[in-house]
Length: 111
Image 1 (cartoon, rainbow, N blue to C red):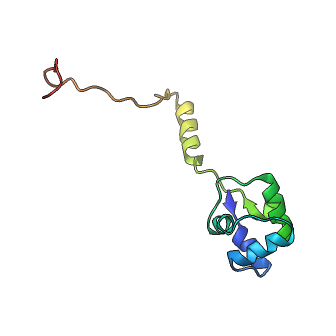
Image 2: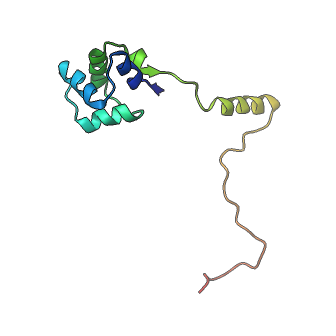
Image 3: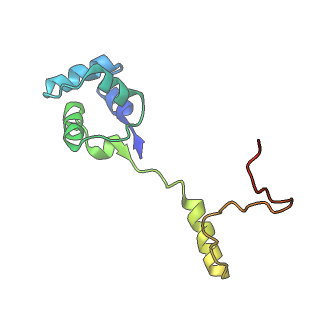
């Protein structure tokens, strides 16, 4: 997902986290300045639905304005798996380490 908070805020002539905090407080949303700065500075890992609703209310936007779906990064992986399945090759699964057997086996750990 692409987080478009700064773009949506710019449409409302909001250019700094402190201005954004003032807009939030007008609608009764009172996060800390550090939380607003985190939202402003990058894509959040999680956002509470209540907070998302208040952010949209403060900026006069919709959730679709704030969050934009991006193509999945795994698209190439899925294509490769489809081709492998179509070619009849079996997926080997996770790769496991293989112990080396090219020398004498130690009976005791090294000193």
